[in-house]
Image (cartoon, rainbow, N blue to C red; front, side, top):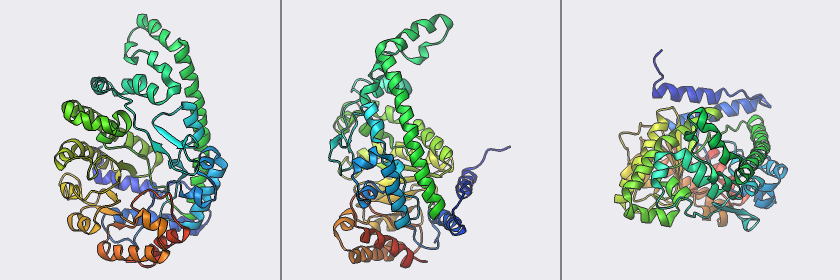
Length: 442
């Protein structure tokens, strides 16, 4: 049998998404679910759906809207669940607002996570989490990453970023276990007290993760079945430059590396491309949801020159995008900051198939996006976080109507906030959603 084409894989993933084995609470919920799935398929394909869809990343807003702190929501799974059920019931966006994006406070405590601070652990109980971006990979360790990424993560990166797993640094490479005589000597390191403590902590973390996941699954499942809101993020991966810059080297170090050892940076990013693709495919396949979330961080205007963007950022990001598309997956690119200097570089790239991606913009000129990208890729976003936090419902509705008039009339447009929603009045959230339902009809 011939392998499926890219288009056939796309159709198969969307059919599977539409036919999830869900016990809907009502026939109305089932019909709403299927209508929303079709709406998302249409808008990605640059058609005119029944109306403009609405999409958002919730951040900590569901907790604050429920009258609890972010710390309470991250540490008390019952309160987390109640807050998100309330949120989905009240706002009924076009996807389930999932509590899976928030994370588990107890899990991070168990692992003694060093890449982030989170509410009650370095930042205020009512705040969101904050990345710290230390140099968890040293400047002379590029070859270790390039030669064996899994070994580097297990024996170097994870023991540094999770203090509770520091004992893994005593292990040798797993590839040392090749024959019977070598097995015993290898296992000595695994049995030393630091490694034993790390294994025990890993088991504890695994049990906590399962507990947290059971609440996430039940909470999301309730809102999906009761209100007909499809799960939307099947998983996540990153631009290879961001994996190096956010996760491993930190912003300051990666910007210096571009000048001091550019060949190593490029080689490392090439090595990370298939890992990002494989991760995205695994997650989307397991979730039976065709969208993979890719937050874009260090490619924004001001982080690097156009020349460096074309050299260091776009080629490997593009390779990840194409790799996911070839597996029938829709890359959902969350374009943080401004991309006004980048959209012409990316515009209608002939290697990226028409109607195969979703781009949500923050501070990019949407008229220019429409001019350069119209008829090539689905896009949206740009509703300012400041407006949602401090403006009136009338202002929000007027902004959304102007945006729809300017760029949405041909289809292929999604109304969305330009950033993760942490602070927003209920009136303003309703104003955005009502604009989709009333003004966004085609």
